[in-house]
Amino acid sequence: SEGVRASVRNTAKSNQAEGALTGSESRLGTLMKRIIDSDYGSMEELVVSSESYSISEIHAFLDDIIAAWRANELTPAGMYALLKFVYIYLEQPRIQISFKNRTSIPICYFSSYLPTSASFLYSYLKTLSFAVALFPLDKTDRHLREFIEKKRPLAVVLTISQFLHVQALRQLVPYLHDRNLRTFIGGIPFVYDQSLQRAFSGYTFPRDLNELTLLLENLLREESK
Image (cartoon, rainbow, N blue to C red; front, side, top):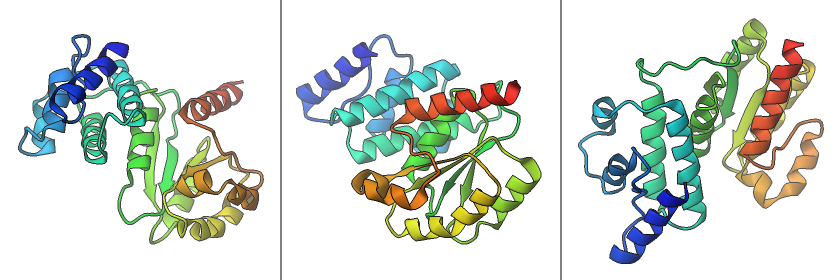
């Protein structure tokens, strides 16, 4: 919200620290300030001891985080900590979501660690009631292929964080093509060099999260007909 964003700007100006995302309208304000200020023991303990927040509150907060990041009101460390909290929070058994789709949509990445782009995308779609699952493909894509064969997901989302991952993606493309599976691709290499998209004709490169969300919603509607 604008109130949250304004609070970020005011805090940053007054104490030359990171924006605190505090704002009277935000129930998450005090907690988020603690996260940015590293005022906690472990993230897991902080999540467990936190209040219960609605999925819509968490989703709105994700929007606020991205807006603050784009406005240079958060450092990378601050944004990473906030997104980590949301990711862990959503994995708790107490969080109940009525998903729109029965079979999870794979979110795939080629790193040996979970990149921020993948964890954010996972949390963002989950708070919109999409069932999603993370698939690391740095060592093998066998588990993804087995999932596709058994579950027949609606689509696959591939997030590419480094240029060297483009080659790994090329090796997976023939399989996805043979399965006639709707595939969405995005990531840093395609932002900096859009000509790379030509090597993956027939696949969709959403401009932003809103477009990806709309495309997934359209697929759900088509499937339900």
